[in-house]
Amino acid sequence: MKGDGGRRSGRDFPGRFPFLLANFLIGDIQTGIMPLMSIDFLLVEHWKSGQAGIVLAFGSMVLLLFQPLAGDLADRIVSKRAFFLVLAFFFAFGCLLLYGHPSFGRAMLSQLFLGLSQAGAMPVLGAVAMGLVGSEGFPRVTGLAQGAGHAGSVFGAASVLLIADHGSFFSIFVYYALTAILAGIVLLGVPGTAIDPFRAREAGADQTVLPISRVMTPSVFILFIVLLFFFVANTAMLPLAGDKLSGIYPFESPARVMAFLMFVTQGIMIPCSLLAPSLVRRPGTAPVFLTVCLLVLGLRGTVLSGARTMGGILGAQFLDGTIIGVFSVLLPVLVAELARNTGRFNLLQGFAGAVVSAGATLSQLLSGHLLDLLGIDRTLLVLAGVAFVGSIFSLTTWEPRRTTPPSGP
Image 1 (cartoon, one colour):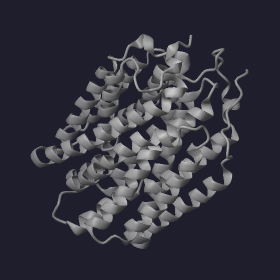
Image 2 (spheres, one colour):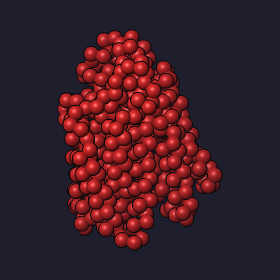
Image 3 (cartoon, one colour):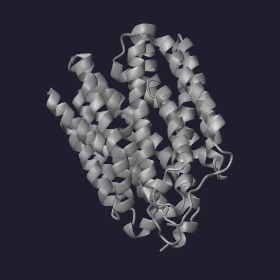
């Protein structure tokens, strides 16, 4: 069942343009929707912070819980393009539910559909990439896909800046809805016959799918703990940077401030994502760069804590773009290494995504409590400390060689 696609380098493959364009379009909406929804609820709809927090926390919980199931579905469902199209319509429906002045119930329903769609999007696109080129070409294709996604985020941030100047907040959500549907339609341009369903899930030569108990090795659990450290430290830093920049320029709208920061950060991520595959060309090198990313993340939090000017904040965001640009390629490549010959690649991607969501939720909760007690600068130092502790854990627990589960039943 494994054809010549297993030997593709990742430079050229069937459906290259529609695949990368779909990543461009989905990157546009993945990064921006949640911060803008928070701004909409608090500053436009004038909700109480507790009410807005419940709605956003519910969306995060849906995202967290559904990701392992979405990864399993991405492994099992042969028609991955159709699955992605359904997820795109879920996202669009969630955006359109925010029309007018949404009630609490309608906002919760919106979060349900947005969470379901976001949980499945990345595992499905990862499955398509693996199914098209196999493990040899996967790092290069992942770098191209992440570069396209970050370019889409830059385009989206510029679009949000333009819409914020000339339209309503709901106009931004309509834009996101249309972009999601277009991404789902564009992916249909990838030839379905070119996506090998067994290669897409990293099954062995005999197409064996291992039980989950044999996939959850010590290396997998170490990865999950490192991811938790990373996203507890990372997620709250961008909103805190936005708060600091808003303090420097109090007359700018919050939407413009966030869009500007996303524009700068995502622009830096593009070249970093394209260069990252060369860093992890040899198996076993990804954990090294994961540790380095945590160290640089700690440095970013420290710089951001002391920043008093736009230049200082943008310097910290330069570090952010560098870290996440590399990390966005490292993570799926590392998961692919750990899932080799198990047939559970996308399920592991789903579990990793759930850990990322858990870390992001904990980061927001932690920073929210610390802000009242310590203020922005000391909260950033605490988050930097979490990153430094995570780097020590990563450095002392990863084995120097790749750990791949056996391929037998």
